Amino acid sequence: MSFQDYFPVWDQLDAGQQRRLLDSLSFQTAPRGTILHDGGMDSAGLFLVRTGQLRAYVLSDEGREVTIYRLFERDLCLFSASCIIRGIQFEVTIQAEKDTQLWRIPPAVYRSLMAESAAVANYTNELMASRFSEVIARMEQVIWKRMDKRVAAFLLQEAAIEGSSEPRITHEAIANHLGSHREVITRTLRDFQSAGMVRLSRGMVTLLDTEKLKALCT
Amino acid sequence: MSFQDYFPVWDQLDAGQQRRLLDSLSFQTAPRGTILHDGGMDSAGLFLVRTGQLRAYVLSDEGREVTIYRLFERDLCLFSASCIIRGIQFEVTIQAEKDTQLWRIPPAVYRSLMAESAAVANYTNELMASRFSEVIARMEQVIWKRMDKRVAAFLLQEAAIEGSSEPRITHEAIANHLGSHREVITRTLRDFQSAGMVRLSRGMVTLLDTEKLKALCT
Image (cartoon, rainbow over all chains, first blue to last red; front, side, top):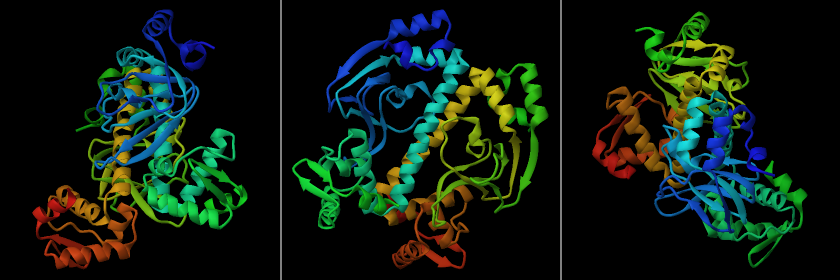
């Protein structure tokens, strides 16, 4: 599978635009844990994920984290190149959550394609709208959902992503996803353990009763 | 001042597109309090604000509100026409916070302009990026800022918008902006009153010490 197969509006570019884009790409393998972009860096370019998984999060002044969205195979990360769109006034950090293969598109090239092609501009619009929707959903959860419901939902999501009932994730990492404190997460997970929903061991949470966890989420 | 002066990419449309847009417009006056769009309605079209002020908010399952952004003169509201962009999966309610004059643009017309014109598509991108930035900032506040700091910041913002140190706003309305409960807001405002920062009376909060409120926000 090549770049062309991963970039949905490829066929709507003319031959010159296709060439310009292909010539500008760089391919990269980022081991799990790599910080690919942080708000302070120069624009890192857009990332198109070939395999793996990225996490985009924001940092508080005190260094606390909260995930704003995740990217999977075929997803394009716009906000690592916030210079491509005027009006973006926040800084995200992008981290590889798994070993990840990706293409980097230089911001200047992408910006020129957006300016020339309504198809690329509208594709970009759709991507931003999807991320926007995720962030709104996340904000609703933060404001209105109890922490135990959010932890239960997160564990179920992790299990689905990993395809395993034993997602490898630390209490600290769960806190960083949900914008909470490790102590709060540990307390919640211990309550789940007492209720027979999970079993805790070092760096791992085993889901014992997914039905009960699902019931808790609703 | 006419529509042309309020629509920033007017000059980048061709004569046919300009005509199509002008012919499709309707002009409306919405008294303060009017619900112009709610998630359940059919797409209401895009609103371009001539004078006044709109509020966009989301509702919880229990009917609680939280403001996600506000729109002022010259702002264009995209999300009252979520059908114009694939990928929008949330529902907002749009309410006039003041008596408001606005133009409505039918979604089908705007969508056709976006498809034809990279300028319109990129303008739309910038708008969405601005709103996105506001929502991220709001989420950061919700997660990481204490409620008293958020109430202080909101009061100062209201005073700036109203151009008055006596913004007319109820405790309920403040709660709806911040996604909180009226009781919490009342308690916070009473603490402010005890500290000499505000004076409370029916439907009004008088700011007595803006320096102290500003110091609290930081």
